Image (cartoon, rainbow, N blue to C red; front, side):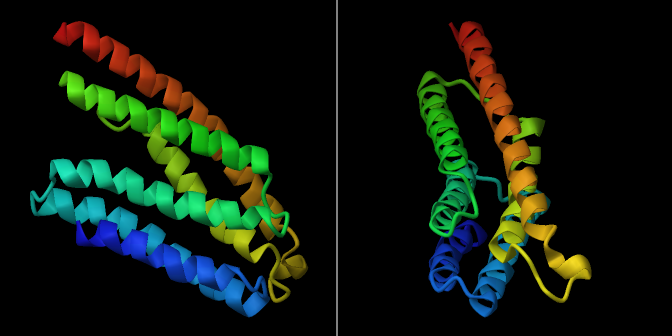
Length: 180
């Protein structure tokens, strides 16, 4: 749970580092974002390894991811690095899934995390730092490929996000029929 809270807390300095939109500060923001992303992996790893999986952790882990990703993507709209429509789609999907999770919990329906949702998160965690940095002059080709690659990964994650949201919704409906 502490690692989950760390991701939420790290959102603040990441957002602060993004605000100036300079190469140096964007490198700080990308580095902190990568740290937060890696902490997401270890959060689950340690919870399973030490049998410390909790109901609170199961609910807060995706919330921490959403706070981190949504905050950063929203700020990336300002310099034109991401499309507002992408952020709207991801936010709407996440809100929808949050509502389904709450209703499922109230109905006693357990819905396991879906593989598409895990891939969606992985693509976001890879795409966002690339978009934050956009281009790095010391990379081959001046790094002009970095931002467009990250942007493509984010759109692919959005497609997976919608697909996993539909899959999650179907799983809830199927689980509800079993409980009834």
